[in-house]
Length: 178
Image (cartoon, rainbow, N blue to C red; front, side, top):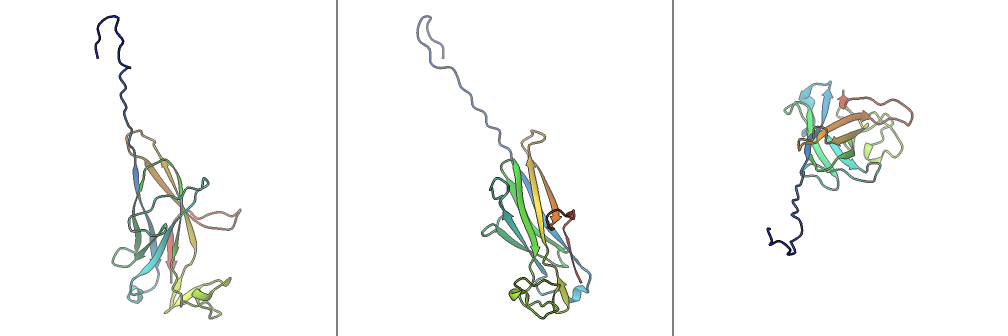
């Protein structure tokens, strides 16, 4: 605003610009069923995605339709054997952690005839109707960065089979059932 010489002027002009940035990624699990797909369970093979706290205690965002930081998706012959949990939108940079695990039917049994629902400390393999299920927990670490400064985050997931401390991890998420 212009003022007459010698008069008080208003405070300086302040212009505020915002930089809005986000990114998206779909997390998926591929089912490798080596058996005859004619024997596929009625709803396919179910997988569970769970958001877990990162090193700073932050729990990452989840896809639409999630409940209590968990989402289930099914892999079937009809959908290309891929359990797609849906798109996750990231609104801030950081590292986010998730787990993915095949959901083993509670009535699947191991060699000792213990059901999965009552397994306690017992281990598999877990079998139901001739199909062996894999209860391995896979970790997914998603890194979200503003690499190109173009308003879109670079979102990079890394999948690994959870292993005992001090042992190597496996780099891909492919679950095989026989």
